[in-house]
Length: 367
Image 1 (cartoon, rainbow, N blue to C red):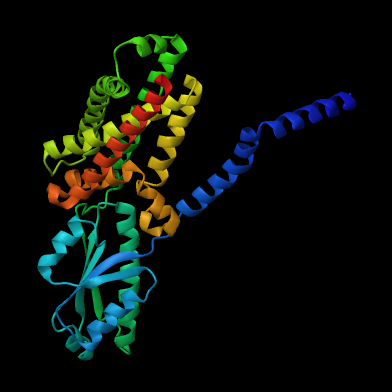
Image 2 (image 1 turned 180 degrees about the vertical axis):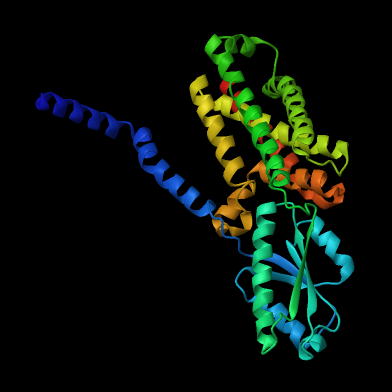
């Protein structure tokens, strides 16, 4: 019995050695997922961009700024005035603003309680809660330096959360779920379309028709685009009714951002479909290309700023990253296109790129 098992084992080892693709997958994929999850699954939040409005400009106020900057959690963007706060928060260039009032140093020297306002960007409720904890800890530590025999803290923190005052996690999670669901459904739907033509044998008929590859790709995209757009808008409306998702921006901006995102997702599905030989492979590739990047590398759950540099670089290739910035800016902040036009431009470039690659791939197959 063992002799037969050993014979089968030898045969399988020889087969695995000849099938280098399978061997590579068995050895590479576990290491890849270890690196991806090990670095991306990080609840620690560091490199929080913050700015300071210093209305006092004394030794004490500069000491407080240094305490934040040297804490290891905050990166100082700059000392700003009041009119710069809103644009910086709208563009996500800062996650927090520390407002030091006039008379801060004098009040501390006289043993008076001085309020310090901390403005927080609340579009990501989990990050805002953590950043608030960091800020309060630093303020308490600085207050202890001046208390001496005073029984009360001399620095009173006054946190104020913008865009999501109640820090409802729903307002953070629902936009991410919208991007996640829309991405997966759009990619999978088109990833199976061309493969289905191959399996049914109708691909040969299409090759004989007076049809170029780009027209074929566009024609394949349009029906799924309207279906995906209707589905995504339905998800958004349901989220507004059931979860209280606000709509503070313009509807046309929402439609524009959603359309660009869906065209890119559909193009990615067509590119996958042109590569795969059967629907099973196409489905697996579609899930791999849409599920993991959207969930892990888009800023949906894990803050991008806390990832290592090489993973932060990879996130720039994930379309959901740009869509989430635009979506949260529209529904939560109510800002105009001038705030997130770069993200819309990135979605446009991504959509054009994947549609072009899908066309080139099909043109080579038809030649």
